Image (cartoon, rainbow, N blue to C red; front, side):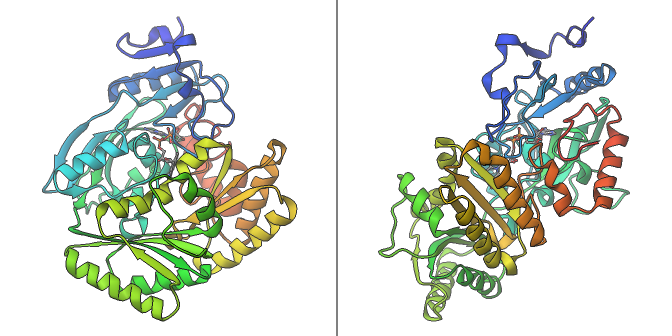
Length: 455
Ligand SMILES: Cc1cc2nc3c(=O)[nH]c(=O)nc-3n(C[C@H](O)[C@H](O)[C@H](O)COP(=O)(O)OP(=O)(O)OC[C@H]3O[C@@H](n4cnc5c(N)ncnc54)[C@H](O)[C@@H]3O)c2cc1C
């Protein structure tokens, strides 16, 4: 009897031609590989049963959420079956007193955001792929996004978790309390471990009151270093209000802005860098006055070269389409998307050295720099490269990151595409402990094998 024959007939199993094309690759669109089968459980019990059987048969499994990952983690390897969470969806509870939401892992991020808003609350994690990415994927990658500077990464927004271990054991730790020091906080083993230690099936999320004010500006700078000065100033002078600080270098602006039809360039002259700065608070009129006075003072100090302030939510949303436009830009042509962290004080030097090295060795490529600079997170997007340059470009960006004591993954994770670079950002002792954990929890190495670490 094969493994598939042993599964409960209630579990949806697709094989051969039934397998939808999307299951062959994540958003990196490299190394396509159709899985041997796609298993689509509807309940935690079904996930447990699948893993119990896969464990018995030593059958490798790749876990798939919304497949918007940018590290190749959800892309199947040869001989793997895909465990997709797309049927395990739904919001189970919104507790307005505890300010928590309990959701199933396959629920899209956007559905969660909208459900919170209906209760006058917010779930503040936000990223461009919100319509497709699932909360299970967000938790497993410890996703960042555009509001980390205010609310932290996904790790800071998870109160409790239910996970299924590689042998089928269900660990239900659906805690709702902010304080709970009863032993090890096991959820942190699974958050950010990219599906290598367990399958997330349910999550208790932390919600926040919906802000009553929102002020958004698009700021232009003559130098990138001025954006760092503005960041320090806004953090000290508008303390507690800063929600987003997204910087885009000139090449990003010049290449992406013309592709976004909801965005019109408001500036007459070109500048070296731009930032979307957003504050949120509790009093629209008072906060806007503070924001305008602050920005005017920064213009007088020559930190800001030019600025436009959104006068409505629609205008603010249109400014944001510039930043989120990188998603469509990336879908329209092959790009490589690097996601590194660099200590903020060395970001300018890093960016200059990187651009110099790339210009010298690869004059034909297009390089766009942008990022969540307040979180030390820089995205480097490269287009117009030749296929045979893929590996050398990866080496160049990651080795330079290592030399600057940065991290080869700020938020997308290591997946399969960056395992070779992990030693640039983690010590051999750290990697050995990761391997020890993996061997203890998944002794047959069946769950997302070859992702994050190699054994
Ligand atoms: C346009 C665009 C913008 C993006 N912006 C950001 C951004 O600002 N910040 C950011 O951090 N990321 C960003 N991403 C990357 C991506 O959206 C995130 O990594 C997201 O968290 C992945 O969720 P997913 O459901 O698509 O996961 P998938 O791609 O399906 O999987 C990602 C990893 O998690 C594992 N996994 C998925 N579900 C589970 C589960 N239930 N249990 C255990 N393991 C699981 C997979 O095996 C894989 O290793 C962006 C991607 C796109 C396409």
